[in-house]
Length: 419
Image 1 (tube, rainbow, N blue to C red):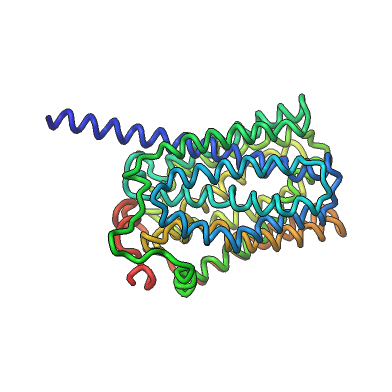
Image 2 (tube, helix red, strand yellow; image 1 turned 120 degrees about the vertical axis):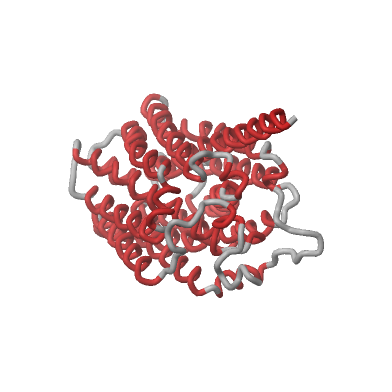
C-alpha cells in the first residue's frame, strides 16, 4: 500500500511539474510577440510616431497601475483561481488583436486598457502559484526549473514570429498570439484545486483594497518597489524602441525575432542554478548583479554592430535571469500568504507599471528629438542606478535559507505579514 501511495504521489508531482512547464513555455510566447513586434507594427504598418507609440504604451502601463492590484485582490480571494486566470489569458488574446483595427491611434487607448487587465496580471499571478511549497517541490530545480521553460518558449516564439513576419507579413503575429493565449488558458484552467486554492480559512478576513496600503506601509517592501520603478523607467524606454532601433541599423525584421534565441544560454544556466545561488549568496546580490548587467547590455548595444551586437544580446539572458527569480522570491517572502498574488502584482504591474509608463513617454520624446541611441543610454544608466540603490537600501534575508516551506510557506519576515 505504501508503494502504491508513493507512486501515486510521484505521478501527481510529475503531472503538476509538466503542467507548470507548459504554462510558462506558452506564456512567454505571448511576452515575446508583444515585446518584439507590436510597436514595430504600429510604426511601420499603422504609421504612428514615436510619441504616439509612447503614449499608447504608457496607457497600457498606467491602466496596470490602477486596475491590476484590484485584479490581484480578486484573484487572492477567488474560489476558482484557475478559471479566473484562464479568463485573463483569453482577454489578453482578444484585446491584443484589436491593435490591428484600422482606427485612429487615439481609438486604441481603450484597447490598451483592456490589454492591461488581461495580460499584465498573468505572469505575476502565475508566479504566485508557482512559488507555493507544493508547486516548488514538484520541480527538482524549484521555481527556476519552471521559469527556464519560459526562456525556451520566448526564444522559439521569436524564431517563429520572425519567420512569419519575414515571409508572410507583420500582421501574421496577431493570429499566433491568439493561439498561444488559448493554449495558456487551457493549461491554466487544469491546475489542480489543491494547488490553486486560496489560503483563506472559514471566518478569515477577505482581502480588501486597504490591504494594498498595508503592504505599501512596509518600509523594506516599499523601498524595493521604488527601485523597481527606477529600473523599469529605463527598461521601458529601451524595450519600447529596441525593435525600431535594430531595424534602423539594418537588421531585417525576421532577424530581430531570431535574435531572441541568443538569450537561451544565459537564461537556462541562471534559472537552473537560481535556487542554489540564492541559498549561497542571498537574493540581494543577485538582484543587484542582474540590474547592472542589464544596464551594461543596453549601453553596449548602442555602440556595436554585427557580429558584436549578437554577443551583447547574450547579456540580456544573463542579467534578466539573475534578477528575476531573486526578485520574485523577495516579494513572496515579504507578503503574507493571503496577499501574495496582490504583492506580486504590486511588483510586476504597479511599481514596474509606473516606471514603464514614464519610460515609454520619456523614451518616445528622446527618440523623436535625439534618435534611438540616446534612448538606450538613458535606459541603461537607470538600470545601473537601480542596481546600486538596491544594494544600498533594501534588506534581504541572509543567504543559505531553504527554498521551501520556510521561505515560501512559513511566516514571512514583514510586519504586515505577522498581522
